[in-house]
Length: 245
Image (tube, rainbow, N blue to C red; front, side):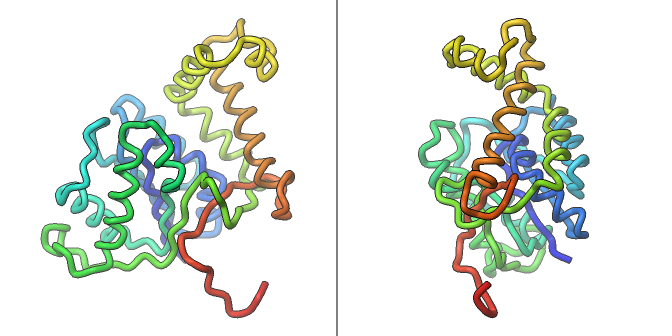
C-alpha cells in the first residue's frame, strides 16, 4: 500500500486529478489532500468531493490569497505536512503551467512546494516542524502539465470524478460567470446550446462536463497513449525500470 499526498493550490485541483486519486483509493492506497488557498465557505464542498473520490483526509492550510511568501514560516508548515503524512508519492501543480499563469500566488507557491519537498528529507528544523523525522519523497508528479510524460487511464473512475465535481457549486458558478464575460456568445452557444436559459450553477455544470470529457479524450483516445479517457502527468525524475516495458 502506498501513501499519496495531493498538494493543491485550490480545491478544484483535487477533482482535476480525481480519476487517478479514486483509482488509488480503490486499490487500497491511503490518499490525502491539502489545500493551500481556500475560502471557508467552499471547504465543506471540497471535503464532500474528496470523500466521493475516496480521499482519506483533507487539510486546509489557511494561506492568504495574494500574500504568498517564500519564507521560513511557510516552508515550516509544508515541511511538517509532508513529514507527518509521509507520502510515497506527491502530486502538485506543474511548474511550467504555473509560471505562465497570471494567478497572484501560483508561481511563488510552486517554488514553495519544491523547497518544502526538498527540505522535508533533510535534517531541517525538526522540532519546529512538529518533531516528525525527515521524509524523502520518492516520486513527484505534476498535474495538468504543459509537457506530460505519462497518462493514467481513468475510464473506470471518470463518472466518479464527474460526480465529485458536481458538489463544487461555488467553483461551477464561478466558471460560468467568468466564461459568460470572456467567450463570444456564438462560441458559448456551440458548447452549450441552451446556455442563455441556464443559471450560473447549471451553466457551470454543463461547461465542466464538456471541458472535462474533452480533456480526458485528448489525453486518451486522441493521443498515442493507448488510453481512452486519461489524466496527464509529468513525472519529475527518470522512471526506474527493471526492464523495458
